[in-house]
Length: 430
Image 1: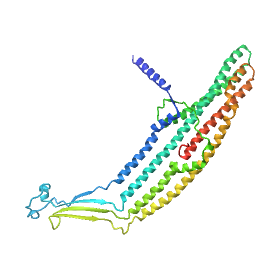
Image 2: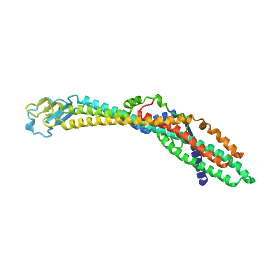
Image 3: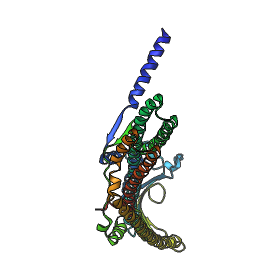
């Protein structure tokens, strides 16, 4: 009985797994990006750095806590010391205070030279840097996502080409089997067709391995179940005529919108705020205090007030001020370096995209390449009718596959290089 139950449970689990494997998630590119923005774990984690920066700003605004000290408590005293202690003692102290010497001191640190405000300003710049770091992560992940989508579209489209060829070969093989059985065609021709079909099937499987790898990356970015199969519905090209885009405008946009460039400029601003804070540290802070002393001096109850501060004779924060100045100067050089690098990357990406766009347009203008799909069916029928030779047919099939691969590669390259151009600019190109 237990054996039959175990078999039934195993069959149920296997059936559910197979059912799950057949689940297909059909998404358009816009839906994929929406899922990415909502679910990507790295983006969620990176965005929390902004909340951390907000918390640090709130912490910098807080005053230092006052300090309360109770000391010099005399737990033992003689009768002579207590002599003359006839007056009433406040209830708050009780009998303990009647016979005990003690002091109470309350002190508060007051920061001078606007140190607290300068620290807040520095933390505010830290938040701006955290925002730009988030934007930079988003920019990198978004281009990775779009490249993965382009690659999957290319691989799936190329698979369809191989599938069409495979169907044509299968149709021929079935026809040739009958002819070989009747002795009308040499068996070597059938073997040639079967060999070509195996090559296509092997290449199809290799493409599926690449698709599986790309889907793994895509599903990781989207944070969705690994058992799902993603099917991208739209295959429109995301591109823009480079003649309609001004390279000078792209360079200006890169300077304004690229998060890494902005972040490096903010680093300079941060070090300037840090320098102002370190200079303020030269001025000593004040500590204001009030104290009560019972039986500690000439008077029985003594209440006093005071103020204390360091004398800046030796340490005027010279080292930290010098380091802050060097950090500021260093960040200025790095900001200029980042700016130069961004400009060169934009020019390179624009040149690569322009070349790919023109080549793709050249392919689209070639009517022969656009009609090649209809020629596939014609050649297949002609071979069945013995109007073309086996050599001519195989040669056409190789040409067909090479041309389709060239078209699909050119289309993928246009989309991919356009995304790289947008990545180097740091914003969507309108």
